[in-house]
Length: 126
Image 1 (cartoon, rainbow, N blue to C red):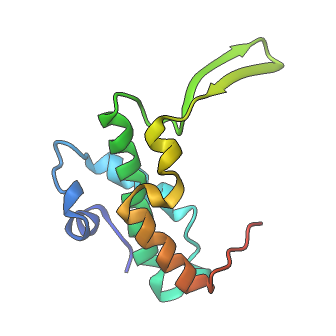
Image 2 (image 1 turned 90 degrees about the horizontal axis):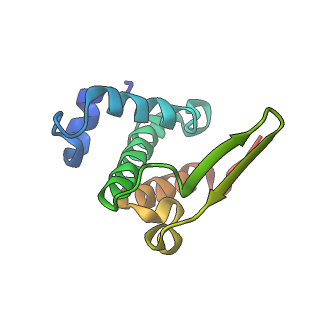
Image 3 (image 1 turned 90 degrees about the vertical axis):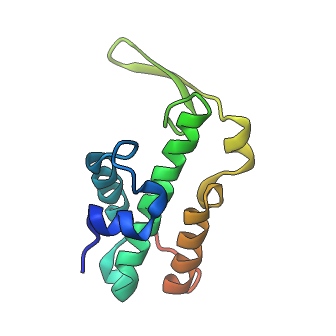
């Protein structure tokens, strides 16, 4: 069973209001999460992992918006100076610095716990 927008809204009532969280926004979060949850590794837990990671990504976006920022992952400015150089500055917010990674949301914490269960606490990065 694949996770779709309607199932996601049922599983995560925080995102149930389509006026606040459009179907397209949720679908994009599910697409992004699917890039990180390999069903060959996750097996029967893949849908649960996908749903939790998408909820984590959505919640991070909501945190960024409520703090007056955008969901830039701490990137505050990007400017391209010519074709061969790029300048940027990364300025994490106080909230991001104290609550980073999966621990930033309850969904991320649940995802990390599930990931540790599925992978035995080790993750392979290729």
